[in-house]
View 1 (cartoon, rainbow, N blue to C red):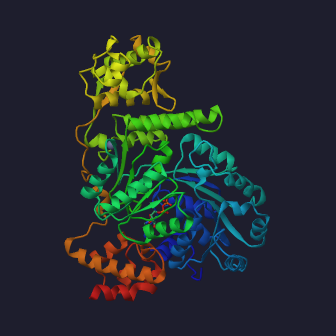
View 2: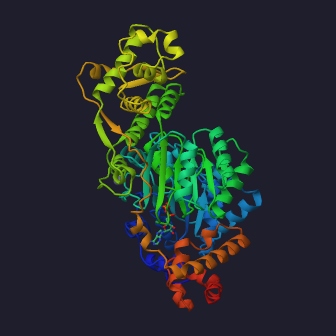
View 3: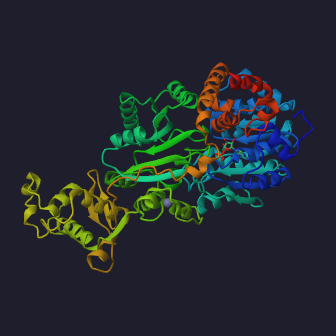
Length: 605
Ligand code: ADP
Ligand code: ZN
């Protein structure tokens, strides 16, 4: 830094253009500046980056940031450079010359921040390089990648435990947006963070509206959601398989919604191109497998939709967390059905790895299913999962349209005894479709072929519709009162089924609300800070057009120039001087010098 003003708050204001720290940021920053180790758990959008960027600027030397997000390093570095911060990265995408230049800059003390892929730290040449320069701190981003319990394990991260032995006096700060108690403990022990102070922020993301809908025609449901609530918005749609990614992207495009696919089967050029388009263009939808999105810090992702059930609550929370980093109202929407349960149970059954691994997968899935089937506030349940308390939020589907629960004991008994009779009287196993046909007393060819109309349970379940029976099957599977096996997803009893059949336990089930609750915009509060008066809208559009042009000329994402929230505030306040413009949140010293005159000109038009 060239200026003499080097204290943390000064840097926040001058470099980043923000007035004050948020939440625990200040305590974290002070602690690390003073040389302490820190373990930071903060939700996506909480403001983790500043927690290591500011200490890197304040402490002498270079902040070394370990991040698995190679594809995003260029954007991260561009964003910092736009603020006047001297940043560089070392990863496998560079050629020899580029690497050398960065190494030289590091050794010459001409960098504030250096981003590194974790596998580089395994190379003797890298540790030797770091040993010859001056390191201000080590930041370990996405620290949950060190945990085998979690959902995103990366073996390269295990080597990070050695940082402490090699550089015992240099502070380390590990950060993650996803951590249950188990993951939290594992991060601390695997990274040797025994002495670190732990900072645990609230995991709540109040501006995100969580909704989980029964799945019937997921593509159509998705289209309806995008048309009615998210026209023109940028968003991410997650699917489990590459094939459904391709099909869904095509379906959206055909229906007038600009969408691109992203999955590991695409060649790396296409992937990079689609990701770059998503970051740079306004209002593009990316349809992706979970391979997409870690570390994507596009602030204006307005929705995240899941067309298939995520494998764990941690994964779900991280993926949905990519919506609404800018604090504006956003939607997390998941469509979930019987087939999801059948498919995921099957995947676990046939997965590689030992029994302990399969048990872990099952535990994750059970927690996810419990979230889907809850009649309580989704947010309360999510926060509980991360060991935190919450109040019913008024901004999730179960709060907006509380589902009733009903006593499903008799229905469960009917269904389980049908499975029992098939299994024990006939030595047969069937999938949900046949079992439901039997309960409804349908004379289908398959029923007649197997003489299932002679079973005593034939036709005993006409009080429920076929859809309702599917809901019963799904929930019994979710509660472990029924299981599926084999390639055809045939239903079998579990040990716990016996308790229901023997009338030893009650079964409470969730009745689906007739209609999906529409986005009642209860998250308005979050938006108020940057809500614009009507007359500001055309000014905002002019600023946006200027920003688009500027970003294009520089080959960087638009948000690297200014965030929407900053442009909104400028459009509302319409400052007429550079000093006035400089007081807008998000306008720091460097950007003011670089763009100030241009913006005043746009405002004067
Ligand atoms: P995370 O890495 O935790 O997901 P980021 O570091 O990307 O979050 O921050 C999320 C957003 O909040 C960014 O747009 C960032 O510029 C903004 N932000 C962070 N700290 C502050 C602050 N103290 N004041 C205003 N905006 C902030
Ligand atoms: Zn709620």
